[in-house]
Amino acid sequence: MKSMEEMIQAAQRAAETIQKQMGDAQNRLDAIEVEGLAGGGLVRIRASAKGRVIGVAIDDSLVSVPDKGILEDLVAAAFNDARARADATAAEEMQKVQMAAGIPPGFKLPF
Image (cartoon, rainbow, N blue to C red):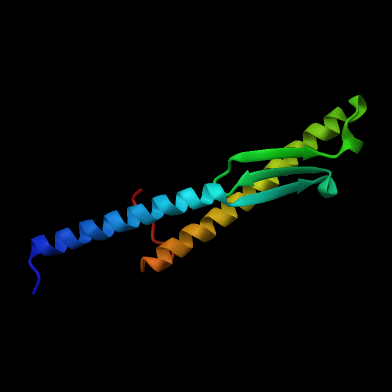
């Protein structure tokens, strides 16, 4: 039978391993790109799965003074679409790490 000290050390090692895996997953998330679209693709925003906006592309047909309000609304909608896709991708990646570590689905880690 293991001593209490051995069990605590094993738990600490497991926690360190999980923390490293979570950090590695966060780094991978910043390398994964998602794209948000608005206006049927007239406005596109590329973002990392961590939520960092990488670029914005606006179709030339929208660039005129009278369309400024529409353009601004479409940029906001494209950003929100990219953010939602980034959040979904991040949740999937973190779930993979938790499953690989043997952590039950839905278990909230303290970090």
